[in-house]
Amino acid sequence: MAVKTPSELSKGFEKNYNARDLKGLMSLYTDGAILTMDGKTKIAGKPEIEKVMATMVATPGNRCVCTCVDCHEAGDTALVRTDWQMFDAKGAVINSGLSAEVAKRGPDGLWRFIIDDATYVSRSR
Image (tube, rainbow, N blue to C red):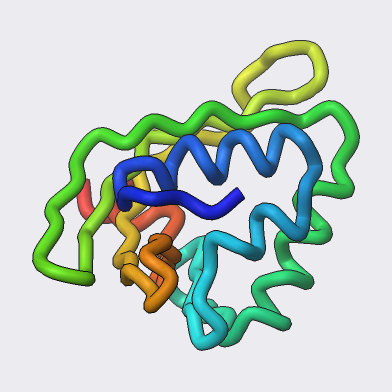
């Protein structure tokens, strides 16, 4: 599921993650994207990000809720902040954070992450 506006990236991630749709998740990233979960380890490139996402979606029962709390768009680039929570199969919160992502509109008009820092705003508090 690709998205037409950068503010839709948060819900796009949620929908694809909860559906365990790895292909859909990867459609939200550019080929040269960077992902970091902790701000130290940087996962570079779609193939490496896919390995991380494959592990995440393989965890049975977990689900996430993602809400775009801020989106600033300048031409074909946007800064998105997402409030997210991860739940276990029983509905207990197992992780949460506030991320910062840089997104780019592609030639096809769809938006994708170029930088996804899953905990950036959480670490900055």
